Length: 346
Image (cartoon, rainbow, N blue to C red; front, side):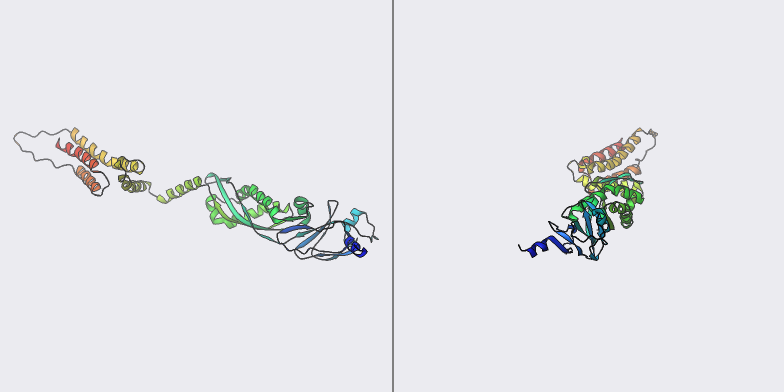
């Protein structure tokens, strides 16, 4: 190695970061054994910040532009080094470049349901997902809180920590929004803005600016979703008596398909209950007819046969209609019919 090469290696005249990867948030300039020439040029491109660090202590910070490194442009470092105003020799310091480009499309989500208080349901457990964007605003804070003296630091390294920060504080953010759970889906934009206000100071602690925060989806655990669906359905029913009648009528065809007829399990139990009311009513009416005192006719008068009660005839017609439609078995029909006719013959 010639003397010229040795000198070029030892003294740095131009310092810059040709950033190629948008995902790199911090890059340390490779000093090795080199020293910075007094009067060297520091180039900080748009969307970059340069930070000089001396023995782990942050000194001077440079915004975008072309800077000449002298004791006048490095006041903090000059003070730390105890340089006088006539300093003109090379010096050594760690130089870190930070990217201030906007980091877009970052995802957040709750891996497990979080529990929230709600004025309608008292307590609810929900999952939420969305996206956010951020950028470095305070390079000094980002260095002190996140990166330290690493050779480089990427968005993939910091974003898991940011997601945990979001999830751990999302409960208080939703609670402070004051939006009931049933209205969250219709107010996701409002909730996103509220959560952004909650998260902004938390991001600022790490030197980051939260640019946007979006809530894309809110969902409930399956069991709670079913309970809410039931409550919504009840509100849509209106007349519960009519709804109960409808349920019974709808379940009869299903019950008739079971081997046990109306005594089958499942839907058949509901149908059997409804059908049993018809049969029981017919039998009760027949029994009441038997218990009603009979008026004994005089021997000299011929008494015409009494017409069957209208309600029993109607019940027999109902039974026959159910049989014709295949909704009850022949055995069920014959047994109930026999009980009614027997009561009439007594």
